Length: 235
Image (tube, rainbow, N blue to C red; front, top):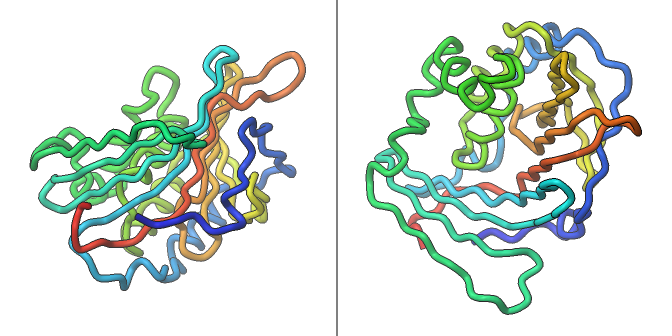
């Protein structure tokens, strides 16, 4: 199991909404990212299973929870997840292993075969709000299961570039000190979705869901992608 870097381990338990500078048109910046997607160290790692470790923080009507999740994924749709509450004060750890086919509904491999397919699959996450917000939320959900390679990351940047209603905020500082390109989608009913992408590789660093309140934006969900790699075994 990967361990988070020291600079990521102290992430806030109650994150404030990410501060954004004035936005820029999303398309030129995202098209450049799609054309110039750089390699990531994980891309050349050896292993059958794609492994993702992320930290999820939730505010459910004032009740706050934080948990760390490690997930495996293989091309044959077999996977496993280890979930622990964070901080872990010695409580039992649950291990959930799923047989091949359990992830068929996510269909991660086929999701990235075209920008149209990617938008259609991802937008199901928040289709009740709008397709723009749905794409942002869907890409975040996919990132918790699968670390896409350079062509897939470029495809995601292209899909974002081709979707109207988004702004980009380069050099956005996340809650744990990592800087990236923030891609923001806001609905007309005061809901915001925010992806922070690595400025050169296009990988998802973080995701935030916030609502507009009389005192400003309030974070309801914050997802921090800690580490990803490949592993020869599930466990």
